[in-house]
Length: 594
Image (cartoon, rainbow, N blue to C red):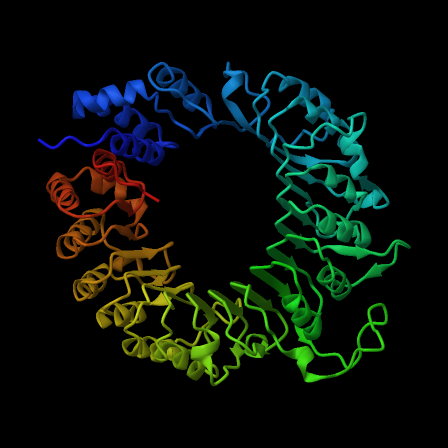
């Protein structure tokens, strides 16, 4: 008998416990059976003091389970989802608190914060539905020496739109020496799109957070110069997310996203490498090119704007005598950018990625618009591309097909999305796209179609293609899901290991919906003929209304056949509905259901 080294046993047990963390059923089974493997495993488990490192106390039932099991295995990083819990929680293990009470803005925040004073190990606090007057109580946060994350959502007061949030109030009465080395991420947002956003003043106060890594601002007005100063001087900030922000000059007048990006491009000390911007306005293409070509270390850029425009003159605030209309202004020379996501709501054609004049380092490209141009030297410019997301459009289909048959050496994933939010789609061009996959035999391993109510024949066409390298297929939903056709098509594909349908589709005729037993039989057939699957997600197609009568029938034989098929397969994630009989089988073989 071969004995495993101790470090491998520790790694196996750690992975196993991590797999079980949020499931009381799995935790119990795991703890009960570890010691049955062998004495060596039991000794390692006891001596190394292995633990459950994430557990949410969402209810009294979960608390009672924790109270029972904590006598047998340590729990850490407990997540308390309400400050009103009347249960005894070990203060030294609570690291995450979310106050989701809808009346938090009525009671003084200090009352709730005082209740939490004993939780000295808290690392994250989430506060929802706050109003402006609660802001001054945040000085109480200083009592948490390990706090790293603050998430605050404010209610807008439509009748008091002149109210302003002043960042100084976060630190009222707090010495400058405190809170310097703990906070890593801050999110401040308002909830009401219809009201005028609060003005967030003195954001430069966040410079005192020397480890601040992440800032997210949502539906706020912010002083432009203050924000630029913070980003340029706090070199710990690497992730910046701005959603529906109103940029204000020092005079209080509103300025544009273009102006912000121009100033930000000139920051010489900023370390931001992930930039997400969602604004309902136009963006000057020259400003975007300048941002990409700047010395900023941006590797991940997401832009959601109305459209890219080309202006003949630069804004007066940044124009100099040396500026010209030289075409070099529109050439991208960036070799750092790896992920580019562009969503344009009012534009049909995009060519920004064609402006590279040297080999790019783009690994993932998301183009949520109906069409885009493709330069001839695609092999050179997109050589590092690993993931491509494109909108389905018959006009641009030749471009997508050219991308596929070009066999880009690193392309792993192809995602097709709708060109608009309409529920009506012309799928004829999708047939053409799938047919072209036969010419790509390099490294593509994932094909995803993000459509509602995908026709069954589209899915069958892809499955029966039996692509030699694609291992994962997923879609949102299938219209008129036919289990017999699905089983037949899956049998013809022996390369796929992951098949995912996110949710049920529309259009099924009631008489065509399979019964509970029929569904189990089809599922058994799929697992028997395709034992290579490790992930299988098929939404519950049987009619839950008639399920009650069906359960009374003798279907144990079908369940036994399903269990046997599962035991002989490689499946570890199986999502097929919430019926108790199937859940029992999943738990028995430690199979995830999501």
